[in-house]
Amino acid sequence: MTEDFSVRDWLGKPYYSLNAYFKQTYGQKCYKIAVDAGLTCPNRDGTLDTRGCIFCSGGSGNFAVDAGIGSVKEQIREGLSRFNKKAGERFVIYFQAYTNTYGPVDYLREIFSAALSEPLVIGISIATRPDALGAEILELLHDLQRSYEPEGKFLWVELGLQTIHEKTAAYIRRGYELPVYERAVRALAALNIPCITHVILGLPGESTEDMLATVTYLNGTESCPRPFGVKLQLLHVLKGTDLDREYLDGKFQLFTEDEYVDVVIQCIRHLDPRIVLHRVTGDGPKALLTAPLWSGNKKQVLNHLHREMKARGVRQGDLVNTDYCFLPDERSETMDRSES
Image 1 (cartoon, one colour):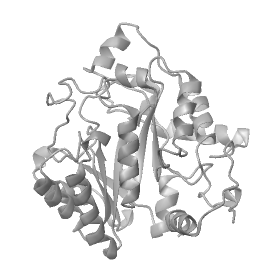
Image 2 (cartoon, rainbow, N blue to C red):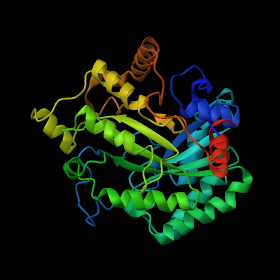
Image 3 (spheres, rainbow, N blue to C red):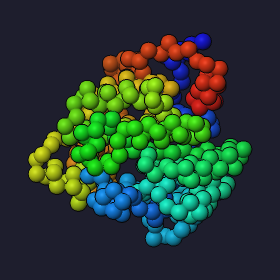
């Protein structure tokens, strides 16, 4: 049995956006509220390193609610207060800063449960590392999923892969090899916990072919299932990071806006159309952003991308063989996620 992806309703966009997924699944736009759980990272506390990844300024938590406000529950309440009633009544709590499964199990249970118990919260998304998903953590996530799924709430896990190329991974100080990511994704898939994979486009030394190899890998291999979602992140340089020092020393160049749009279009065309694109660009806090400055105008970049894809007449997955033969359980899962 096959499905015609050319007629799928992506709400006017040439790719399967997170907004389209939310509107099709919940009937309205849903907003993320990023919180800081006060955790650290094995790449910072000395377990693997003390410097963090080469591009990291704050564990990707620069847009989180200020942890100084108080507990995760207090941060959630503060985040909810920033939206008026017209924003809707469905929110996702994003545990964003540092490694959010790298802590005592009892504490993690407390903060994840606090978020999932909020009446306006439809689910949580947990940013972490593949090497921070041990047996106890997986058991915790499975328990939470089974407890809150009957209430119509979800639990997602976000993993920072960035690249499949080991040379680049060593350069950015990722701290784990590709098989570690694959084991984590298989373990999550076995528990039916959706995974969202982060990829950085424009890493120093990588060619367009290298980036396309990473994206194509995400369509699924014998050793690693495809993720539920993908974030395509533009490499940007933040002040005070080791990457910032290398950039200012002239050791690499960044994409121009035209170059990035061209590369991201190629990546989107090679990406399985069943995968939800949670992000197609990226921007750092303007006060911390060294370069590229054009990335600070996210609306402009998205409009540029959409115009260019329309002009070229291209869509997500149009370079992928979409003559899929679904098994009954896979088709059911796909319909639940994308066409509700």
